[in-house]
Image (cartoon, rainbow, N blue to C red; front, side):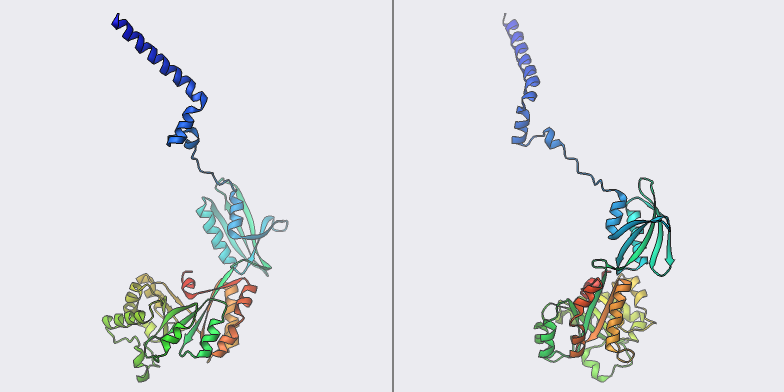
Amino acid sequence: MNKVKHILAIFIVLSVVALLGYFLPKTGFVDTLSQKFGGDSPAAEDTTAVQDTTPFIEKMKMDLKVVQTKFSKRAKRDAWTLGKGRTIIYYLLQAQRFVNKNGGQILYMEELHDENQSAKVDALSPQGDTLQLLFQISDNVFRDNASYLTIAFQVTKLSPELIVTLNNLDFPYDLLVTPFGMAESFFPDLDRVKDKELVLWLLMESSNLDSRHRKMRPLRTHHTDEQIESIINDAKQLVPSAKGIATRFAEQGVEHKQLLQAVFGPAKENNLWFVDLSANQKSKVPDVCSETGMTCKMISPYNPSNSALDDYIKRQLRGAARNGMAAMILPLNEESLAKVKSMKEKAAAQGTTIINLSRFMTF
């Protein structure tokens, strides 16, 4: 009898469990418990990310910042008008990068040498659709941040008047400073200049060097690697916020591979980039820079012997609009400061943004 009761009890329990398993999900009670105690629920399991359904061609337009689109009956292509301030070659490279990155394929590109900057582009979308496009640059609509300009000043002295004028500038700028052999008041005066970016303006091997420059500790070809490392480390210690090194004189130094290698080693250790201002066409900086993994650029500073200041400034500003980027390296004096006082407005009018030299070096 006891055995029969035991079997009957097991049967009743199993029946109750079966009934609960059937009715509880319908009441929503299980979902409530799951949400309360962190268990899985149908809502919690639905974690599928929202997919980007923007068509490929629309994403391409947004990437290129297309100003206007229309169909050209003459070219029998979709004509895309692009913002002024970038060259047609720049846009072609940008389009190529976008198409390749997003799984498409460039079939054909041709720059058209007509009166306007334009080009033909044939491409395949990731879905296999053929795009036949005509790129053309607008005559008057500038692309936002279409180009960049950096402005740096070579500092030989700091007067109270220069400090006041610098502090009134409404755009970012760099000061190139030689840390050695300066007057005692130089660094306290430098601290009074607000919102500047500093660059070590170091002398290098040159026929213009003489005994007067010895106190400025130029980097010479006869120096050992240890001596050069010591000069660069001491310079960085004097100007700890310095972002890079720019050459002063140096027309002979930039032709000397071993000197450049000795300079780039400690420069890289101090997280400093390198700017060649020598204007020497025989400079080995690009080659040595590539070999050592340094970040380098060659920039032509203002030279009063071959250009008027106004012409130099206009040329660099125009170069930014045409090439996408340019740099002005000017002597720090009242004349040059007066010439660039309204530079922010002039740059903005052509779609150019003024940036620090350290950001310029990343392009």
